[in-house]
Length: 232
Image (cartoon, rainbow, N blue to C red):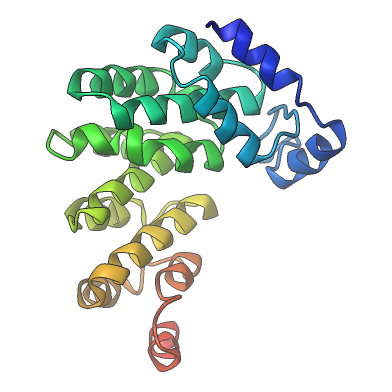
């Protein structure tokens, strides 16, 4: 089982008409956040099925997929790594995490980030050092910064909120709405488990919090509570 085998299976499912639509959806035109990305038009269920089918692909062959010019090849490679990280031990997880960080320039759209980083970085960091996330947040690189924020979803699932709040505060002044959305999304996830902790953070940072982040964060609040925070 090789990279070439998986790539051939992906290419056989190409849907040019759908690829045109998806390219517009993921903002691939010049000056947009996904500039230059190339799509084949596969659906996410198809890519998940391919990942399960080729879940035994060696790590170095999967890395070639993650480096591929086609978006769906990169996604399938990341999904394979995700399956392997969930089933593997600590050494496997750390090896994949190291490769993921080294190849993060290829994790270059929000769907690639969101489908991969909570498992590939979040799992090995659950009981380990998390300083890398703060280094990624400091990079002048949109996708590294989104990786830093969305990775904390894994910690939130284990009722660990400190890094979510710390990274959100660090990124509050970011200029891009994809970071605002990531902040708001992670804050909302905290609120599902501890609304009092979320509300305290919102009150402390309300004047800096981007409106998009705030709207995402309070989606599950009662209408009166939403109005209260929006008025602030």
